[in-house]
Length: 124
Image (cartoon, rainbow, N blue to C red):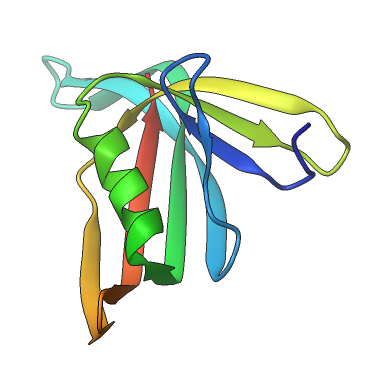
């Protein structure tokens, strides 16, 4: 059973739980628009739809967690993203995993630590 605040990502039915520690999560509404100029030069805009952009920032990630995230990115497929809200409702989105940044912080033996990893998931 998933916990409140849990985020899961993966192929439909095979989602993994994203790490909680050091995570910040934000959700943005993106308007999908079509813009054009009229013959008089006025700008007109039609809002076609609103989609979500989810940003997940990690202060620190251990190598195992980063490898799991990279494996999902390397699928280059649309993924299922599940959010467990505080009212215990579950929201599901089909998302595109955008290219993401990360920076190797330190290495201790076989343990690699990564910092400032930012994941962006865009609803399709």
